[in-house]
Image (cartoon, rainbow, N blue to C red; front, side, top):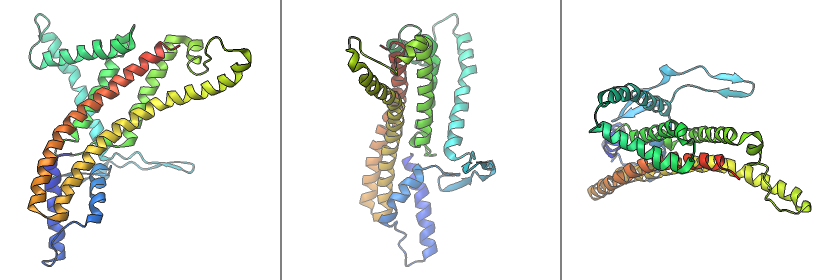
Length: 305
């Protein structure tokens, strides 16, 4: 969430409100509306706001699909638009990678190519291979895709556009479900049907016969909960971290328009600037954690008891 973008946008909105209410109105934002102000800028919507301008996405709307009592609306929202934008930007790296490989075939890469090679080798060696082990290289493209896709969505939220899809629990849940599917399929392929079944129906060796039925029931429930607890943890961690910083920043900005004080304005801008630096670090860190934990989960199930 860009501090400059929010300040300019909210300033225009307050100025418009003051003009509508006449000279007797100070245009101050009521304290009761502060939470709505923050949630409005973080939440999803069928419009894109930029420096006080609003672009409706109604022209992209798709008629709802009715399946019995269930209605499914697939109309794109601003979070969907940003996700597609990040995906398109990632696809642009494919011809770029081919061009760089051709350019540096006979010599060591430099500049941007060197930085990208170092990052990819770090993920391959210290994240994917270190956590997955034998056969890890097959998962490197998936882990790198997760990292760059999440990082792109996180960083766009720090631009004046201020739209962060990863602050939406539906987005993080979808990413976590993809991680779960890849993890379980990897485990099934590595362990086979019988070995994979033991990751759910598990009994420690050496149990007395009378203890096996109750322990099987208990441990099956525990193992099943453990499988679904992992994507839940991925979902909540990413969403909560991306929402918390944005909320704090928006509340700081909102206090300027509530108090309409120069002192509050200077303090909010100073604190907001420091917070933006922290948000940049968090954006990179959370993308890394999501990718790293996915590698850990794949490695755990491929080497399960």
